[in-house]
Every structure is written in C-alpha cells, then in structure tokens.
Amino acid sequence: MSNEIIKRAGEIIAQRTGSSGHCVLALLDETGGPTASTISPAKAQGIEWITFCTGLAGNSAKRAKACPHACVCFSTGEYNISLVGTIEVLTDAATKQEMWYAGLENHFSGPDDPNFCVLRFRTERYNLLVDWQEARGTL
Image (cartoon, rainbow, N blue to C red; front, side, top):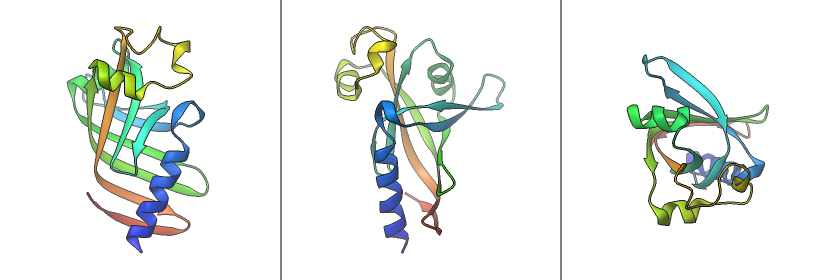
C-alpha cells in the first residue's frame, strides 16, 4: 500500500511543477526560527527530490546556504504531502540550463543570469495523506 501512496504523491508533485504549481518551502532563518514561503517547484523525481528556481540574493537561497534543513509541503483539501530533508544551492551552468522553464524570464534574463540559482531538496523522510490513505517513512 505504501508504494502506491508514494507513487501517487510523486504524480501529484509532477503535476504541480513548473510555473503552474506551488508548494510551501520551510527553512530556518538567521535566528534559527522557522520560516515558510510559497514557491513554484521547477522539476521533481517522485518524492525523492524537488528543485526550485530562485535568486541568489533572495531569502530562500541565503537560508539554504546557512542551514540545509528544510521541509516541503504540497497541500489541498484532497491531499497533504509533507517531506523533510536537506536543501542545497546550485549555481553550475548545466543545472541552471536543465532546470530553466518558461515563466522564469519574468524574473531573470536567462539561465546564465548570475543571480539565478537552483535549490535542490532531497527527501529524507515523508508523511503522506493521499486519496485518504496515509504513509510515513524514510528514504
């Protein structure tokens, strides 16, 4: 049963990537306090990893650099997908090119924009409520 829930959660995340979807990204701020913000996921591999495109000067990138602990949540009245893990800031040209999607041009000049970066979240544990079925575990 858990494998089916994990697969369905991955499908939901895939549907919410790119400029049409959003989730909540929670990080720790400079005082060690929790912060949460809405962000569009760029790409994902099931519940294993999710990338986000943002600016190096923004709070999310600064906080991810300072502390790698993070939580991502996709939620509606129909499901709640909560993932806990680590996040890293990527600035290499290949990753930025691969993660670029339509809509980012409203914020950056292109994938080679020096302020453009990619945050890669990797799940360590999950709590899923999908189709009224629940699964918890670690990856």
